[in-house]
Amino acid sequence: PTMLIAPLFQILLFAYIGRSAGLASDQFYLIGNALQYASIPCLFAMAQAIGGERYQNTLSAILVSPAPRVPLFFGRSLPVVLNGAFVAAFALFVGSLILGVHLPASSLAPLLLVVLIAALSCTGLGLVNAALSLRIRENAVLSNVIFGFLLIFTGANVPLDDLPGWMSTAAQAMPFTHAIEAARQLADGASLGDVADLLGAELLIGAIYGIAGYSLG
Image (cartoon, helix red, strand yellow):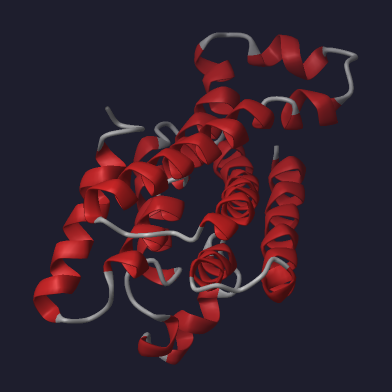
């Protein structure tokens, strides 16, 4: 229910708020919230996969293992990326059916690529979150706080141009900001080449967070 039902209610909540306030289209809220909700598995699962080693008393064995550290950390991120991408894709597909939002057939394959890149980028932030979970008693509160920041700052529900300048500037360094914008342009008929710069920025942000998380871990 957390992964498949909750994102649909989040989409509906903001879509109906947008309808009543006359702010933006259903498509705007569908894409923004579907992609942003990938942060739940990317943040929580990544923190539990790494930080959970401490509670399972397996952390010491991992730290003294001669196995390379890179596969140990980044190998755990692959299922998280796939999980996050599935959650976002499911929310996007089912949400479009519920709200009656038509997504052009030509945009479906590029949208799936954007969803995968968004999940990959957020999993990089999830690695930072996981590294912090090794140092604090309880990580769930921090994960929820990060989720809230991503919901507010990334343009999921409020256009970046309508946010205060410092918020829209900070959003440029957060996962999802560029992926959400790319997905919206694709849904409006843009080609994959038209959003290549946005996807490149999203991948770069994910790589920076991933390296930072690995270094902290």
